[in-house]
Amino acid sequence: MMFSAQKTLLPKAAATAVALSLVLTGCGSSSPETASDGPVTLRFSWWGSDTRHKLTEKLIAAFEAENPNINIEGEYGDWSGYWDKLATQVASQDAPDVIQMDAAYLGEYSGRGALLELTDVDLSKFDQPVADSGKVDGKQYAVTSGVNAMVVLANPALVSASGVTLPDDESWTWDDLNSTAAAITKASPEGVYGIGQVNSDAAANLWFRQHGKSLFTSDGLGFEEADLAEWYEYQAAMRDSKAVPPASVITEDANASIDQQGLSTNKFAMNMYWSNQLGALSKASGQDLEIRRPPSVEGKASEAQQFYKSSMFWSASSRTKHPVEAQKFIDFVTNNPAAGEISLADRGIPANSEIREAVASKLSPADAKTAKFIDEISDELGNAVPVPPAGSSAAVEALTRYSLEVHFSRLSPQEAAKKAIEEAKSALL
Picture 1 (spheres, rainbow, N blue to C red):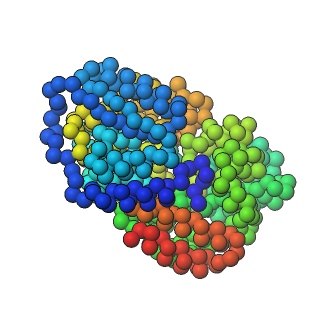
Picture 2: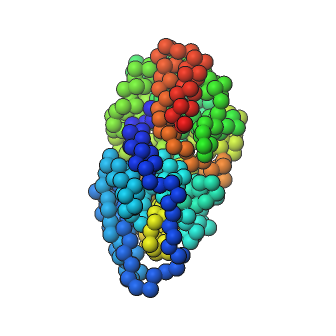
Picture 3: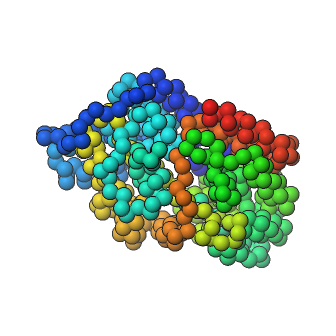
């Protein structure tokens, strides 16, 4: 399972696929790519907290002030109901003009013709892999609103108390991570572990990318059974060395809220998270947590195949009657300095490098530290991560569930890999 601080996607993804399959084949916008002469109203949907709603309303007001002929009507809610509502709207040909999009759904919506190709949004200040992350079959159907990266967060108090020195994060390997975490566990009081679970889909993707593979391609799995067995063998090695907690603790931690997870409660000296979770984890733990690069196979940060994860995307409906204005709004929230100062890091560290630099002094200490790290690794990025195919959430669930079977010693890495890849492939059919 993915870290509990991340979203659970499977039920909503399945519902979305069913609804979309009813009507979307062959749909597309026939609207000419010309601006309207008179006043225009755009509907804009997003999910998020009350804080995000208030910030988004300020974004809308700033846009309307610069574009008095365009009125934005907001439609928002929480994550749990967002995708069912959007699927129903799209199926009834009543989609919002501008849509806050997630990577888990981008392939499904774009593949069925529900999204507009975005040709008028300036991406020149994006790192190329970030710009490409919104492409499906070579066409730009989404624009990244903000970026995160997979990191190792370290609790300096627990590390120091263990007497273990962490290796240089630009040159440590997966074996170094295992041995270092095992040494911390051994030198720490009972119930304190070197690192938490290292079995998330993001960690697996880094591992596969460093081995010349990937978690997904645009239409299926990007690895073979033998590759997955090797990943599970690493899980078994961390289990046997006691670098990680027992399987029961891993399971409990993955289902806990972020403020109750091992890094927050000072039980894990390290753990792998998305960089945007630094603030919440530091606050909960009462520690000034350190950001470190994930390990690599070769011990070279330049070959770690690191990637920016799009926290979310901006997309537009292929049926919008106002494609020019819809793209103008997306360009504004992506590239306008005033928009950057309003949003700051609410939707991730700004993907536009100039906006990122401009707002740096206004970020919270944790977000500023994250932004600095994002900039530091910009020349270490591998290729863009492909948009995952439909069914990817169910595939991830199977892959992670079978990693737990290895941690519980109920299946060997080879047995788990065989079963996991069968289920994952079935989910992607």
